[in-house]
Length: 153
Image 1: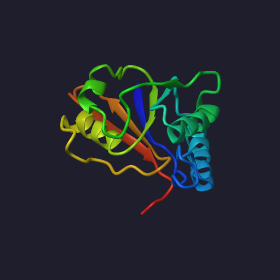
Image 2: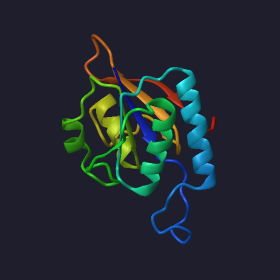
Image 3: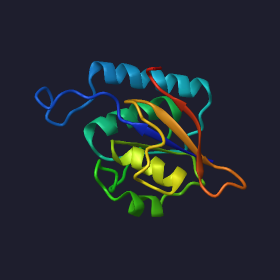
Image 4: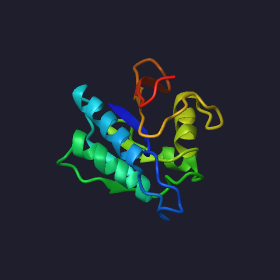
């Protein structure tokens, strides 16, 4: 079972959209990554997002490609500066869940799950990118299994 961590797609500036919805590039890159993930057969059973417009739109695009019969869910505690430890405490790692959210929250969550330290950055996310974390037998913490990113380099 895996946890898929996704930073929302590129968003519009606040001057163009006060809620900072996805830009055209954000929509295009999210669609591309979602299609690649679908091609690899990434098994997502549930998608959860922060509730912010850009995260919801990213979650909707991922859901359309990866689990069209599932309803996406909003979850509190996933905003950029929310408490990572409190969120991780109730995070089921025995399901194929996709989390769509924001920085710095997601990178700190990855640090906590992989190293036990939210202050350690172990992976630099990109907008629309997916990082797969898994629990592996005989290892007492999550590991980064793979990543799909819109830009290499």
